[in-house]
Length: 367
Image (cartoon, rainbow, N blue to C red; front, side, top):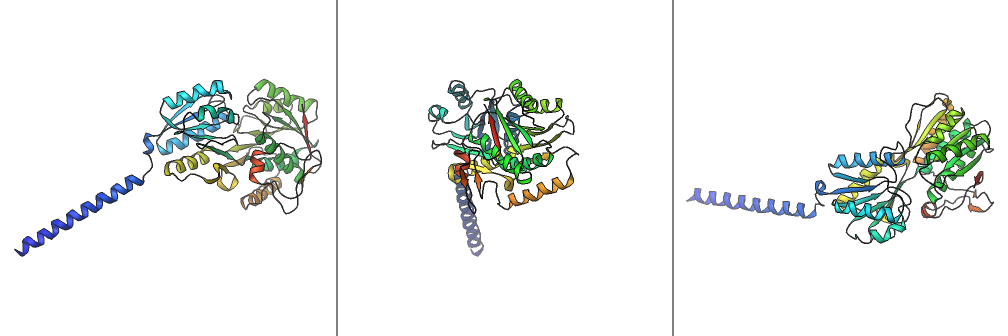
């Protein structure tokens, strides 16, 4: 009888343990986000994902993040920044089961709200600062921090004190980069002038090279940099034997005149964004804007002609960026003489991100 009672208690305890285990497993499954492997991520690209520039750097970063999570990625390439082109591309991605869609170009902005609002259950991420709808979040890197460091490099290497800057579309993003670059250059060489010519397009290889050539031949630039999707500005610099600083270009088949490249580490940011999406831990403030501290932006140097003391000077300033001494603070004036910031102050992130429609002292824009 005693043995029967002992066996009965064992059975009761075992049953209770099984019930408890079932409850725990149920709670875990209830709290767990959607099964990652069932998620399909989609993305729109303004150019091909093998353009060796902006689109390819985005694609590689996003593909890396999706591979890490073992989830499917669907892409739409060569989609212009118009509702006419973007709407059917988004429809196709939704039709393929995408529940997260990345819009990887600045012009995928408020003009796409009509189609975005057709899919309230789809989460959209855009590099545009426009993210008003509930299901849209902005993500970007503080590339202006690296532009500042690249400006320091340019300011030390120029002999003519004239630097040429080929710019794509007119936007806060581009203005911010031009301003940071100029502030960096003039922080080490106050005589520098940055002359800017706009392509009025992100992707126009012929125009990009033509404007870089004008900056060299007509404007006197002895160093060229750019903010565009392709790298023909570097080709122009190489042909004229002047220095250049690239953008999202890890090319190593240039001469020693090719000094460095200003790069995004998109994989870093995509991993963070997708992790937050899957865990439901959405980032507050409607935008991600990661910089040097997160390793999302970087400058790679390639040329042996850069003096070691210049490299050290740049590295020292980078440490200050890591310790939150940013770029746009203190006494700052626009190129028309208007005071934009005072000593002890810093331009807010919102103003930097969405309202930088002016240029700092030292910038000359050619129409």
